[in-house]
Image (cartoon, rainbow, N blue to C red; front, side):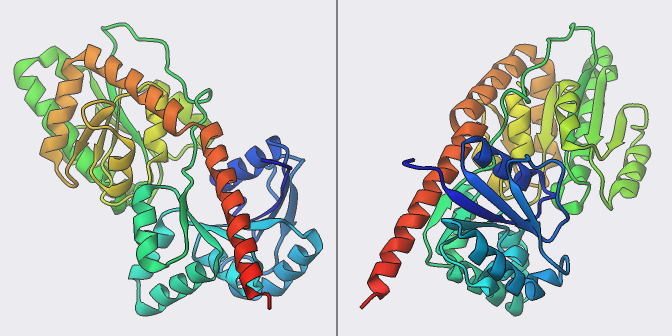
Amino acid sequence: MSRPLRVALLGANRSIHTVRWANGLSERGHDVHLLSLDPPSADIAPTVRQYQLPYGAPFGYLLADRRARRLLSRIQPDLLNTHYATGYGLLARRSGFTPNLLSAWGSDIYDFPEKSCWHHRVLSKNLNRATVLGATSHAMATKMRALSEKPVFVTPFGIDEHQFSPRIVRCPSDRIVIGTVKTLEALYGIDTLIHAFAKLKTRLAASNGDLASRLMLRIYGGGSQRPMLTDMAANLGLNDCVKLKGQIPHSDVPAALDELDIYVALSRRDSFGVAILEACSSGLPVVVSDADGPAEVVLDGVTGFVVPIDDADAASQRLETLVLNPQLRATMGTAGRQRVREMYSWEHSLDLMLDAYQETLRIHRGTTARRQP
């Protein structure tokens, strides 16, 4: 990159992803200004200038456009990078600022347009008003291209390979801990995981009672399904070995992963797989569903296993393979970490985002030149 950029970010500064983009860009020497409907965040580096827009969400998406327009006029950034294609995408569209790289995250593309024709129309307008679009995965990019003809660049959420690193190997006599870190909502298939674990424990009890008694399932996350999932575990007779540990801050996730031997993510729909890649970077083998995002980030049979959505039997069988084979767990964990380092490291993701910025500027200059008489 020839010179540092002045970048305006528009998004929720309470999100770990916004925090990481803002701080990472600033660490690279760019002049970063963050506009948000949230109050200033203590997690944002002091080198990043923060601006709180009025009204808060959701009203601010419609009413804060004048304030955003004045701030952008004063800041005069080289480009605007809007994070999340719906609410903040609407605010960016109403502000009228260009060039604008509109970065989608997941549910804004997968869920929002399915709610109604009106939602679909709003999203399409937001996408089409942007200069360039960003997607966290190739699968999401495909869906976005069906909604808009604007160029789409894949800019995945990167993984800090130093924060998420392999733990010290346990003794063979320790418990074998299977687990996940995910919101407890129907979308993420935690019920399928509990059923798969119950099937695994029953099958092993018949052939290897000692091994079956060493199995544990730990589930980190909060959500509306927690009471139902707690009852499910009790009804399956798993109270002594299934622990719902509650929601934890992202800073505690590495320690939670250190407790696991196998990571599982059986989402019914997911646009990417940040938590899966964090587990891979931590040296864990993974078992994931064949939803778009998980299937994209996992190499089946190499870094883990990919199973059909809602198939507790298939998940149970793959878990049994890993439980019975410590060497395979180690081999897949090593391969997973290597894949993260090669394709999904935080530094590589920053490089991809900065490349997208340069393309955004190039396309904007070309569009502006064509409009001139």
